[in-house]
Length: 377
Image (cartoon, rainbow, N blue to C red; front, side):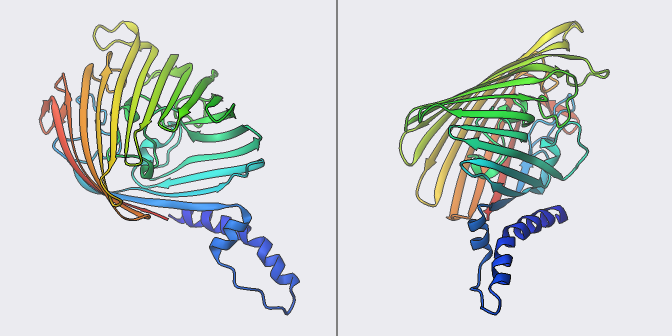
């Protein structure tokens, strides 16, 4: 947490410099009182953040028979948790240079960290320099992936627990360069070159390409298609064996009205040079999945979130188990103010294999309940 304090002090100090100079030049004239919010707003720096704390209960042990976690963040069978305490500092003018920093502390940092970092409960989730000119924006540094319907920032998600696709189908973040070009109000094009999936330092000499298209034909419908292709290190292989990895991700959002919205997410991916769990041969491993979301505002303070999904780990590359995995989640959200949301959730998971560890046995299913409190500032 000391790193958070240092980062915030740094931003406030530099934002306050112009006001210190004005006060000095004024001599004996008494300067008007200036609030921190006024200083940051005048300097163009935006500082905000959130705290995400929760309790979760799993009927199983939270791991597959392969030893891989079967949940993304809520992995403890019976525990209170500080998932995230996040600070976001941004200076992003419409023209010229800017920067963005997103720091995350808490248990979730252990999951989202890059492979070549050793941090435990702290992660530099995003940190990049930005240049904007007209319809073109270029960023360089570390930033979150284009893929997926869900994000690391829990305030932007519908459910408490993260989806299967979020944790097992796509990457979390990339380090590299990304360019976004807004063709018009309907079409946006994105292209980038990165070190790969969740890598601060490249694990090989090859780079991974990212391409994205955003299409918004009306206020009721938006469509995002993104793809990643490049040579990546094969998971779980000692000796640095790499192979081509490809991902296609599609997200469609339908906004029926001010209260009701739907999201559909599809992923298909493959990895070359994987050793088959079935017969030990070298194969191209494949995985795919589909997720559907419904979010309905019951009133100004209450909302209902429903998610259902299906994930086919055809060759066991992502979970360590050859399986077809399904889950359904129901979340009730209460928003007593703009800064606070309390979510309660029930979820059921089922596989076609005995993959969920529960004590000394393995089962085909697992259930859970969760209670989450989010405060935004």
